[in-house]
Image 1 (tube, rainbow, N blue to C red):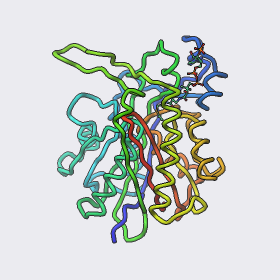
Image 2 (image 1 turned 135 degrees about the vertical axis):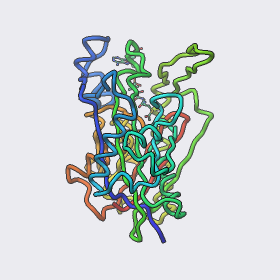
Image 3 (image 1 turned 180 degrees about the horizontal axis):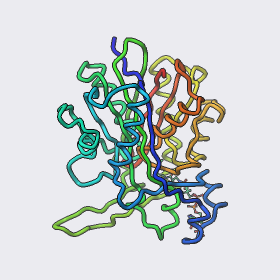
Image 4 (image 1 turned 90 degrees about the horizontal axis):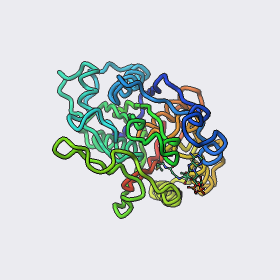
Amino acid sequence: MQYAKILGTGSYLPANRVSNDDLAKKIDTSDEWITSRTGIKFRHIADENEQTSDLAVIAARNALENAGMAADEIDLIIVATSTPDMIFPSTATIVQQKLGIGATGCPAFDVQAVCAGFMYAITTANAYIKSGMAKNVLVIGAETFSRILNWEDRTTCVLFGDGAGAVVLGASDEPGIIHSKLQADGDYIDLLKTPGQVVNGQVCGTPFLTMDGPGVFKFAVKMLAKVAEDVLKESGYTSAQIDWIVPHQANKRIIESTAKHLHLSMDKVILTVENHGNTSAASIPLALDSGIRNGQIQRGQHLLLEGIGGGFAWGAVLLKY
Ligand code: ACO
């Protein structure tokens, strides 16, 4: 039996770090409001010359180095993003070109599941590896959400940031990904969306993110708890066997609620939302890389990854690191 095992991780945050106090100088908000509602203290904003693929490539190189692998050993690239460099081609093919491995001909494509993007991408990579269609997969979550925010809308702009995280998954005889579950319910499209589109050269609708904050909160808490529980039950595990939850980093209160539901204390949760805000598809691999590099997560431990976002789409992955 072939498993998909994490061989290396990497991440990248743009240099420009913006604090809550910095935002309070420009809009009617405060460090106290943002921190108490979300746990966020800082977000990083990409330079105007930095594209999503640039962030992705730095995270990918870090992950390859961590895995001790050359870029040309990768035989599939999946990028989870809702803020691609362009309408097409995919950000994954741009990453392939920037890594200098276009000539390998390895397949490369994007998945778009907003904040659940990394759950969808890693689950797809797992299916490729288990079926023998790929051996070494580069799975990246990368976003420049700062470009789709209305910086005058205090109800949304304080929540998000830019960044990238990457994982090298390799085929292994030893357990890696044990079980995963993806779900979506398109009846909830209106809770969170960026409804603009380009038609005949004109931007139609709004190019900015819109959100029903309290509606998202309620739905996220309910569905994350349920999918985490389902993944444990379906794989014959209990929450007591989980060493770390690595959740989507949107909001500390959502994360606390999921941990409570699983009867796990917050010291079993990798929490990085304070440092980078909600980086959508990048947030789970950013948290994962942080937990691994600072020594919290050790080889052989069991991790539960979980994320939810626009669509609505959500999922959870149980793995042995
Ligand atoms: N600074 C100061 N005041 C603000 C701000 C701000 N940045 N934003 C809103 N307010 C005000 C509102 O205008 C409102 O004022 P009013 O009562 O005078 O009208 C007041 O604060 C309370 O607003 P609520 O929306 O009721 O605040 P709530 O406690 O629900 O918190 C929040 C809002 C933080 C958005 C919360 O609903 C939330 O966390 N929702 C989840 C959103 C999320 O995580 N989205 C990420 C994308 S989806 C995902 O990743 C899971």
